[in-house]
Length: 367
Image 1: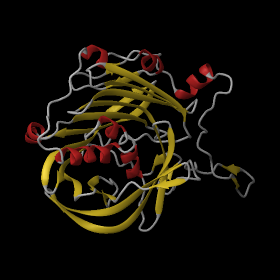
Image 2 (image 1 turned 180 degrees about the horizontal axis):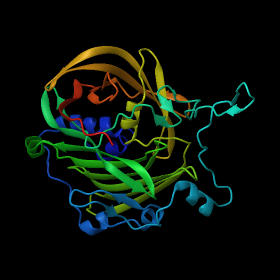
Image 3 (image 1 turned 45 degrees about the vertical axis):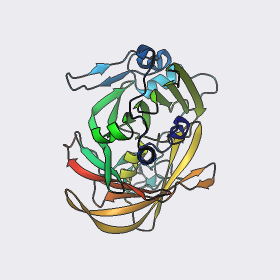
């Protein structure tokens, strides 16, 4: 599959990865070696602008934390006051419900209102926080990705221990795709990983990092969503056909409470998904501000290799600048409980259907 085609799949990474594998299956017999770079240090070296804007304290497997260089940790509210320039924009704080007066005339403060109220359904939230948090530290969901019942790779979604981004507590979500050795040797090799850090209180993505290692491309990317300025910044290093590193930078204005493409699949799990009701939220990607919409179309029991699950089937769509953009016949199965685990992804393509379904699950522990 051409690298340009892969770029177009960035907007929907999980399903995009599945489509990468489907195209690779049709190219059987091609070279399956990983792409190489003349100077690997240029690809993996840090980005000064990113490191100046972001300080990350994240747990590691071998120790308690790893710290990136960057500004001293400080709450976003403090940073906004100290760095606010002329014309700077800022995401509004959650609104409170209208104040009611008691019998004695005293004012009673209403509950926090879920924002953005004009886009998202606020049922199940108090302000921006969910009444029931579906995420557990150590939660791991592994899917087998297959095409015409031929297994190609494993898709893994994991909730890591909390991180700190510029002094603010953040969820630490990792999503990865790794092809199986036999598939790599005969068809196409993929070893991709995305990490997204989502603000705990506001449930908005602060950072994502992306590592792409495939037969067709090598890429390192990172992004920072600055909600004080309502600005997204994206940096990318990619290897071209000559083995040289090319750099790309994007900046664009985002809307309050936008998700990125890697946080979106986790954010979906916060909603109730009532039958026939449409749910929506904002997504910012590739210099575009999008609206993700999805509707729960049915309930069913999904039989899997690790047993049956009661499931909700969701049909998603994307709206760009008010115009509906079909994303093909794609369906997402979520567990019909408080966790809303991603049980199955299904994408119908020109020939056949690509399927990603749960084969292993570790529930994790409550924070």
